[in-house]
Length: 100
Image (cartoon, rainbow, N blue to C red; front, side, top):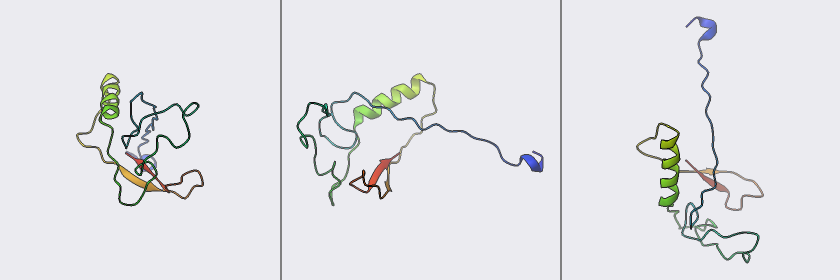
């Protein structure tokens, strides 16, 4: 490449999807309709980020995501790593979000 074009443009997409699973993504709490459920009825120590608890990934959600990826002919990595990203936002009571 000539010096003025020493960089290659790469564009990525971040996709968010709500999957119809029986439980949440990182715990066993049921998915409820927030418009009709009583407040705080589907919350556990994992949901609220209590010290000493660890999230467990929802296998059904991973299966659904893999199906979509394969249908779209995406490259799927052999391993996936989840990490806590720390933020200090008023609407994020745990102070972090889990990202892939």
